[in-house]
Image (cartoon, rainbow, N blue to C red; front, side, top):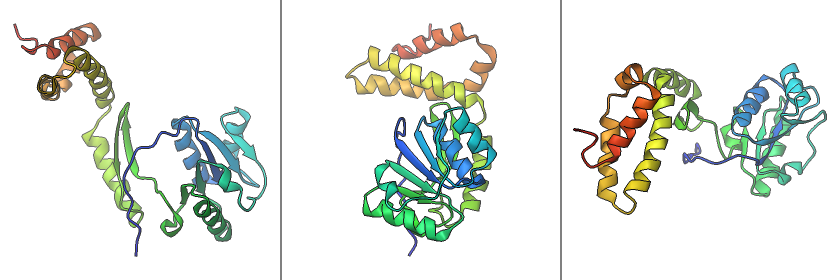
Length: 217
């Protein structure tokens, strides 16, 4: 029976992560982890040039060797992308025996977690998963989400974060007031606002949306 995966967001900042393997698939996972400021160690006897580059730039720690049995137990998260299934099976076994979350690329049966297809716009992350059973479908839907959430959503998300802080400060403990503020924010025509107004004008707009009259004169 296929695994079911609960979608959660986990902070990986400074978490010790191990990547086993040095090919293109391992590289993609490394690049993903780098976006989240992870402390990454890569174990691979023959890493590709880009992985070597990351090591030379001290973005990762690279150990050019084979995986050692049980070494995964010393990490907070592990990804195995070895060309050898025997190695992948061993990594998964070591992780599961020691309570370490593990992802084995293209083998959901050996995974504790999987990577969803993600569209990221600043603090906004939109992810879709098929529980590892049909990743091509998740990839196609990600392309649709790219159109639904164009690049302007980076600014909208950043302004939303700033707006929430203003609301929390102005209406602390008053849930109805806060709800009205958030409603005004999401009903605003942000496509037009971002096109027509300067940063200072948008700041003034946010201040107005916080007030009871919604900034209306």
